[in-house]
Image (tube, rainbow, N blue to C red; front, side):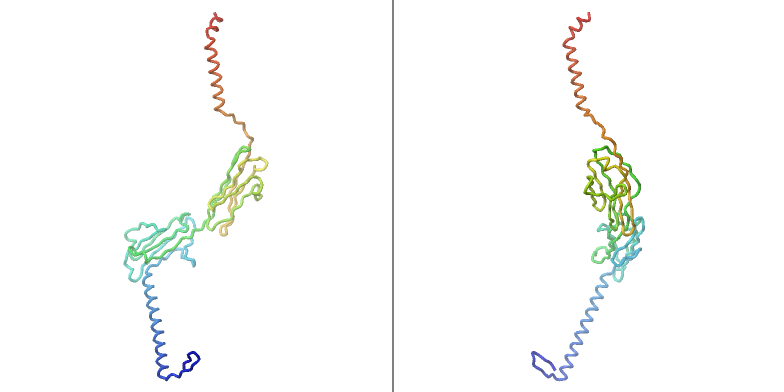
Amino acid sequence: MVIFEGIIFELPPQQVKVDRASRKMKCILKISLLHVLLCSVTQTLGIKIQSNPEVNIEGLVQTELNKTVSLTCLSEGAEAEKQLVWLRNGALVQLMEGNIYGSSSLCVTPVTHEDNAATFTCQLKGDASVNASVTLDVKYAPMLSGMRELTVEEEAGFVLQCDVRANPPVSVSWQRNGTLLDLSTGGFTVTNDGLMTQLTVNRVDRSVHQGTYQCETVSPIYGTSSKSFQVIVTDKTLKFPLMPMVAGIVVVLCTSLLAIVSRWKKIVKCCK
């Protein structure tokens, strides 16, 4: 029985069987075609990268400064004997002759700041469409420690700097004598571009600016780091303009010399 636009049609049993068989055949053909496509994709993607440490669920290789990362590129199936090449951020990596066919290994040691977010790609030579890639995620804390002493004259200016490069990024704060700086008073200016934080004072007042400053960072992984600065404010020294003084002395000497020359005869007569 078939219902079409409210009208009921009776179909012979033979017709019903044919329609069912036709639908079954179409379903089998679709499944077979899907299987062929999946097999084709698997064969095309004939390269994989194994890493130590392993790739995480986000597709990143997590490591730390001064550690070692080992990468091994493996080609499979029809690509097993073809030549492999490595790229770092798109730039070709030089490999030894025996490290290019079938499988190829790469070692990153020691891991540095510059390796963070670097992408390593292994691909077939002559066919860049067959490739695999991994990206490094280098974790590190800011390099902050120690004490620096700074002497500055009153009414002069000073700049304090801290390197706050970190992964993951850190929160930054400035303190003076253990108290969080109030940037709305005191003539303080703080900047932070994610790499360097800077505290600037353009005109020093001893009562306001002398003391111990601390740049402090807080990392969700590595905790708290800090660097201290001891700022000592001295009295303002009087500075005389050297060049005008020299010019004045020269003028006086020249004038005196001319006066002596012009009166030389009278001076000689008086001496006789």
